[in-house]
Length: 275
Image (cartoon, rainbow, N blue to C red; front, side, top):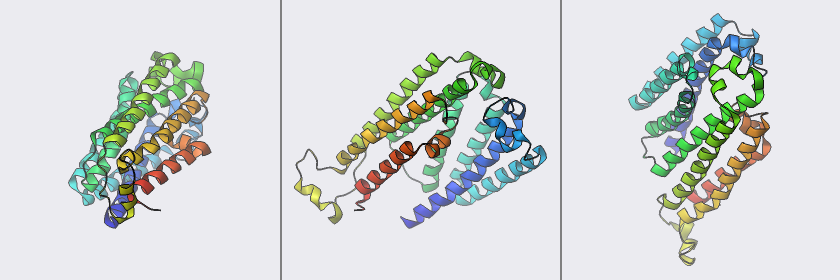
């Protein structure tokens, strides 16, 4: 357990270096368009705080170091990182200019991250969990485009040409589809996830009626928390203030941050009996 934990931390560190280097490359490519964005124009490269040459130097160093460290973990984790890198470079140069494909590629990036972690730890991914990740990734990607429309308004097409092909009602429909599929896939995951064996820590479960005597059934308690989190995220998106990126939404909203913390706490208590 301890080895897996520290390996996870190591892989997070490696992937953080890789994604940071890609962000630098993307900001260099978009420097002229970012200057038209009310929020992105304050980024270090767009604002001129970091020279383009220095940003490219950090980009090259970052992806080389991260891929080398990824290979030291195992070849499969390295391949996942390499595929992620190629996909994101393709997004920066090509895919973000193609309507609908841009959303799918953004979502694919989130999915590859999950697969990279699974490959690093050499674990099996439950099919319902995977469907939940796919739905959530599509939800976050569509939400990103919806927020850009809300922030940029009439200047949306000048910042990103593909935004002219999207409309708020269309993206709202996508959000509705992916939000529903995300919580439903998560609910099915809690229904069917193989429960850990009932040890002494969970012996009290044997005294309960069959209606409540399964750890996987107790996981259903977290479903309302997930639904509330999705509802809260949708509210923030429609406000159009902090939803430029998922991490800004999470760190900028205390209610959503508390919701995620509560979900983590409940999962740890239910699955591992940390009481």
